[in-house]
Image 1: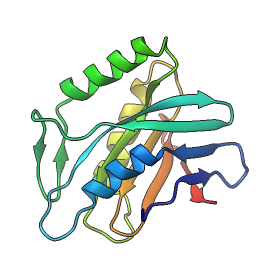
Image 2 (image 1 turned 120 degrees about the vertical axis):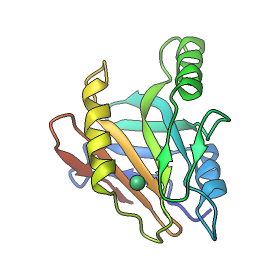
Image 3 (image 1 turned 135 degrees about the vertical axis):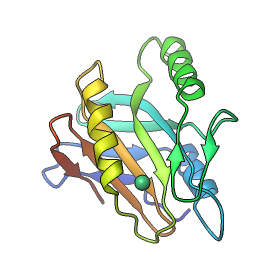
Length: 156
Ligand SMILES: [Zn+2]
């Protein structure tokens, strides 16, 4: 698979792992040719300092896909998050969001940054939002804080 599984902050305070299952979802949605933008939510488990991302939801029939704009209708994804949270006794939880860009090395747009900051502010557990963009060659991975602070992760 083309995307790296293990990511870290420079100071080592966060170690993040994408499961094979999650990387397969990214791989299957890479934007090649005229394929539309996709996205969904990321779920997983938090173990200081580790973050295991175990589920990436995919566009449901409720979502509309566009090539350059992914607009998410939250109902299907939120239902999956709630079901897994209950089934795991509260250990598998909402961690963040992913979407694709038709770029080899993806960079977030101004709209992405605004949206991530808003979503981070909405988190009940006050943790930063894991924000992932799936490009054709690489991932963009960052932790977005409600106050606008951004922590970029790098592969290791
Ligand atoms: Zn974007």
